[in-house]
Image 1 (tube, rainbow, N blue to C red):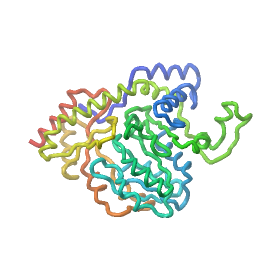
Image 2: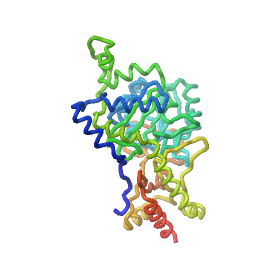
Image 3: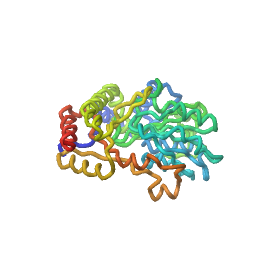
Length: 376
């Protein structure tokens, strides 16, 4: 491939920080760099607590435990999302209630949430697709009306905002991912953001395999023991050392990605204006982070042709997601509430173009040029 779809960011300090971890023989979690990452998020977000985890999936699993999800409960979320969003709650015995999306942002349609609530509903999981915020004011209003916990899936939303509030800090809990496809990465990693003070102590215990080990380390108890359910959600210091090198340059990485995003948008405006494709929509009050640049095409067949055309000319493009409600497990563990007006049709039109830190302007021009040539 002349232009790959993704290149994980490297800032230059990763090897130095990883070497420090090796020299200090401190490979397990909650060492120097895990603490640095935790403090970075707590200061940046202004949350009660930010707990580094082994993945965004595990942050969601912790959220499900803290929300008290149990057998027979219902959890509302969009079907247009990665499987981890649903799996975390299915593992606790929940039934997933999928709600249709808005065609402009590909986020959950906030107007449909109240109608999906039943006496079994316990939580809402809004997914901020492409780092663009869901309409969180309406989501939180519905949650407050029915006494529901809100767990933000902000896997793609680090450094994005909604009406001046960082994504991940609006719901009771927020979940980030640092997979290699994300803006900031350590290969595999995540974080749970705790915005409700009542969850802080238990979150720490759940993350430490259900023990009060963190209290023991701080000298608050003379020994630690098993006190609750939990699992091993602590990342290695090698991972957080790699991640911290990127957090130190978080603004630069974001600015670089936004510059590429805006250049794509500028170059493809004419095609959009001529009706050949559609460009992303950023609602007023949403500050995105350049996580994903996508276009929407006429239909699934045209998308397949363009993927092949771009590939034949050295550009890798991809699509996602296949809606969860249409999968085998989605039918087994969930149901779609109401009419699927947009989830399937819009997902089949969406195509992601290459976007990563350090993407050259020439490569953006080349990719956009191929699309223009295709339609000519």
